[in-house]
Image (cartoon, rainbow, N blue to C red; front, top):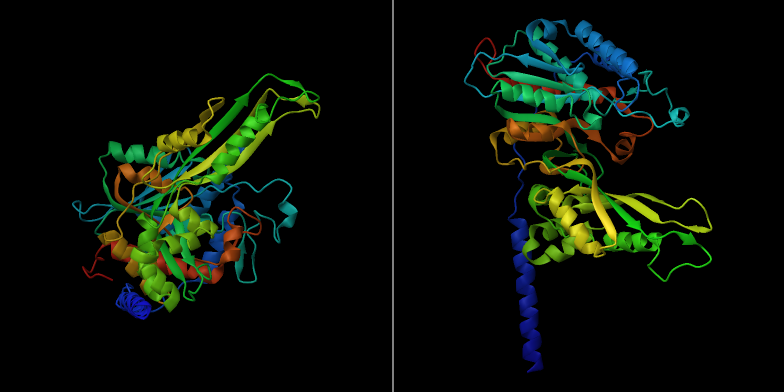
Length: 497
């Protein structure tokens, strides 16, 4: 009997292993087969110089210096006008809220739904006291060692300048669009976009403009970020997370430290217990939504063991999700995240404070809301003595665009034409962008930058020694040039380039 059971168990294991292997092997590559484009001739020195000048304009968001900010944006706008004369001759240019820019490239077909490319002009300030840590002064725009150095090179003036370069080249060649294209260059993305992108959206709504699709900054071509993948992975963001910060406050009678109350009765003790419960009880999550689509697209390109796991989630989902939880980025893709960011209590070592407060930041997965997050926090804290209230307005998660839509396929094809060594997949953007404001006027919204990022580059965004390779700028111009050709429609000769 034992022998027969052992044989039956062995047979079941063999059959299961066979089923897993077969299911893995029949998951063929999802990459679009295209012919690489011949390299477009781009004047790399011109592009590098243009970005260098743009970086010298200190268009920092959040500074209490209105006059200085205005002068910086004026300098950037003057540079754009001087460097791109054909753009400013052929397109309609509107200034919104003082510094944001809306360019309209009119197409010949009024029935074709327009599209929009986006970038932002503002940059985050350099952290006070860190200026000396930079290899080159943050706003000098130095071009050296094959890089353009400066705050905003990656986020986001590199996109701004390369879009304009591509557009100027198309105009120089005589290209005229069939479909109208908008270029949206906000001035306050780093502080929420309320005066820039939001006001431009309101303007488009007033004009009854409905976009077929829009594309903003976001995910990029990552190199060496996914274990087992040697090729660059181009992630096109289908959505972005929402955000809300909640303040937790505990109050009790203050007192002398020589006679403390019992455990968990002080303001700090109550708050600490609440924060511990939140920290140790993360939001539920898993491989779903944009994360599921990403892994489905990448799985066939992985080594066999990883490919087997991701191709058989019907059986191995718990193991896969447990492994993904160990990485900060992959964990964040699967759930609403909880980050303890600010704690304040007490001001003297021998006084029990009567008030302790903390701020907890949540990045909200599509499918959840700011209200559902607040409700769950209240349930997890489970202490009526703790007051829970939102800090600031927050924002809901964006709508999830479709990886099966024609616009996604267009962007995907363009990536494969310009970066033929890349694997293209949908993704979820963990941070915020101006794209979220366009859900009301755009059928589909995507988040992608044609920039190659490795783990070191990621640290430079909002960090020290921000820079971008000149060769990367050339590739970015090539990408936007091709994307505009494909999206805008036939040229004056009536042929699709």
